[in-house]
Image 1 (cartoon, one colour):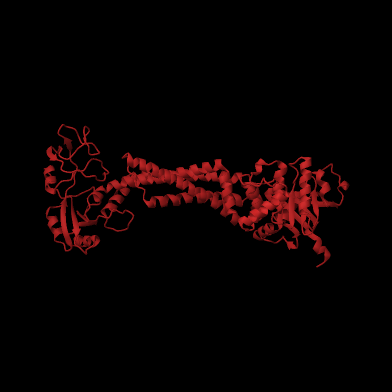
Image 2 (cartoon, rainbow over the protein chains, first blue to last red):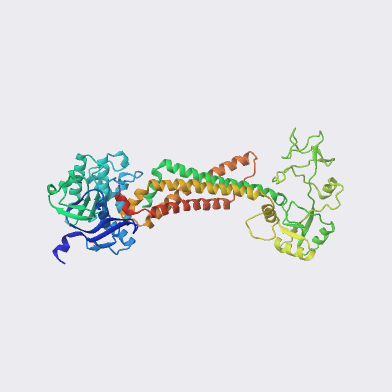
Length: 242
Length: 348
């Protein structure tokens, strides 16, 4: 296996994705190519409707593209059935959502336990691991409270703990700071960067928030359903249209 | 995941209360109405309970115990001659007028409206004096009114003018002969109809007069329809309230179920979570409803109100129906969640 194969975490090539009927078709992705490396935090940016979320969904295995190939940590996703995709997500992916998606009727620790319980881990083991990561995200002592009793920043910390508790190689973050103020957003991104920094992990962040671009190792800009360019330095991006 | 599923259910107390109310009300309605129904129906074969003869013999055309077709007195001798009969006694049943000597009619509970009856009191049956020599507690009949038990000869005396007075014959089998076996012999030798006194209406024996009476009322009166409507109403109310509440519970949690799907939970796990939630609510709702039905039943029995017989079968049937309601509710939820696209979690 080549060195390149070792370093590539996510590779999408020639991906097409259409929605709607043949008469009224909306093109979401058109011959999109995307690559993310192990150990890096890459951001997907671009104007609304450019296909960021669709590409993220394709990488996450929640959408199957009409054409093209998708490979995540050496596993081809195109051609997998729904059950195999579900198993793949369970083992390999962590999610941080824009609106946190914490279950309000469960306690903080129970929310964090969810990915482990989905994997079939015993309750006590899941609880112990959840408590450990809750401490890492700075919420020790808040584990038995309900998420609604926490601030937005604290809720996003819980979501990050939930995304990482089962140590997935790929962390998918969808607008993780859009519901947060500048400082809280910066703290959240520091946390994501610190906790996810590992040569065996890759973090893909979809965002509109140019205030957090500085946390990215690379930034992939999307336009009209494809990656228009990839930059190492956020200063090189024109953020006026984002 | 099932523990979390339960915590999700118990975490939303308002929804849970609504769900339990629907299920409990449904279970209450089904169990209570069924118990009153079977209580009232148990009145139809009261003579079988009050008079404990092992075999009853009647005219072949008789279909139920309240519809006696008079027999000839000579039939008694024919029955007594059947092999296996230990003894056979005549029974006359009829409705008569009874009033106290002061003109007071006996009430439906067997008591005159002025003072309670006691041993030694006299009253009139069809204008013929009768003296009370003993009082026994018996099961009330469907038609209401007190029972007067007396000897066959005296009974004939109170019904002057009736040409035939033999309503039934009460027969005891000899040792070693089963009632069912004796029934067969009596029917073969006399051409009369013989019945066992079995009052377990759930059994399948063909010779039970009580069961025949029960089914006669079932098919020839509007009672089952009336109570059946109430039971069905309970079922539909349960399905409507519980289904709707559970559906709204699922709708409120839809985005979380979508997130759980995105995180890698298969539909099998989610379906089982929903079943656990629905069946747990069903179990609690059934417990509350059946408990309330029991409490109401006890109060009814204590106050001598309409009869209440809660057979274990009623509880099992109610339990099964409540679980059915829960199943339908869970299926509605599962269909909704199965249609949710895991990718929807990325749409804000």
